[in-house]
Length: 95
Ligand SMILES: [Zn+2]
Image (cartoon, rainbow, N blue to C red):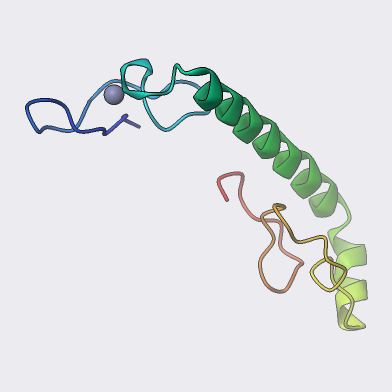
């Protein structure tokens, strides 16, 4: 993955982005606000991974609940958890 910001030459920047950020340190990722946002994204990714792991562990129970029309989605737990519309399949960690 590359920063991709436009350089003075008009080419995309080829520096690696800072951790959790989309841009490199030369292109805005080093500012305080950007670092806070990056840290937040990393924590949210961790949250997704924890929740997805927990959901995967109990997939059989979720299948039973879904058979009765109950899903995490129904219960409003979908936000930010990387779940698809059916609320059953844990998504990847990239969502
Ligand atoms: Zn850059």
